[in-house]
Amino acid sequence: MLWNIDLTLLDVGQVMRAAYAEAFEKVTGEPLVYLTSAAGRTDSEMFFEFCARNYVELEPDNEVLGDFLAALETAFAARHDQLLSKGRVMPGAAASLAAVASFPDTVQTVVSGSTRANATAKLVAFGLDTHLNLAVGGFGSVNYPKSSLIQSIRLHATGEGGRAYAEEETVFITGSAPDVRAAMIGGAIPIAVLNGSTTEGQLREAGAQIVLPDLSDPRAVMTAVHQATAG
Image (cartoon, rainbow, N blue to C red; front, side):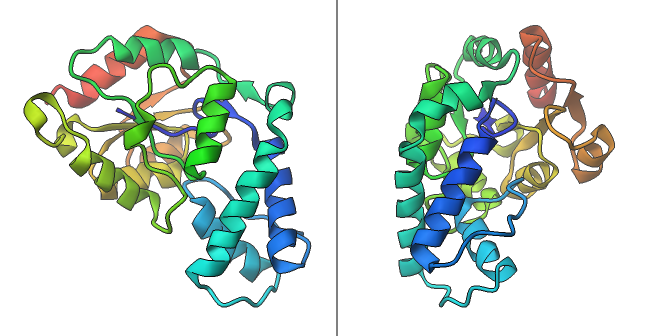
């Protein structure tokens, strides 16, 4: 069971944007004027697009990316006390995580565009890490798209008897159309939620057959997971 974090379980966008700006200027020496959409993107992908959109010429290598990710973790950690005051947990997120945890032989983790440290900090701040196995999660600490992160988790997380989880028993819950497409490519069944600005039509067009209004009804979430994996 895979969960997107931002705008699915919680929203700390205001804090994250400030951290992006600080880290970008520290690494490049230039202000971050033009942002890019974070939907379905990893921090690694976003950094190089930040450079392109802000006309910053840097060699697209792992060294400069590593510098940015390290600076981003430092900038975000410095704002830890702002998470609760400027962020919010999505209605029903904690209850839905607890409800899905009641399914037998189920591993819950996350597929996040954030680095492991930042993703963990977000979840811990709101007490959402309790039912998640973050050791097997996929994070933006590596320069791979989310579809690759999903595939890696699915193949390496072990189920009953030490077997890998199959595509038809792997579910990804998200409110992002790019995430839905990543699930289709990476071998997971998408369940979409209308927590952000993405419309139901956009989510269905991306490939989501199940769309929930939000996570406020844990029973509906459990029913959706059962429906998605019933085959």
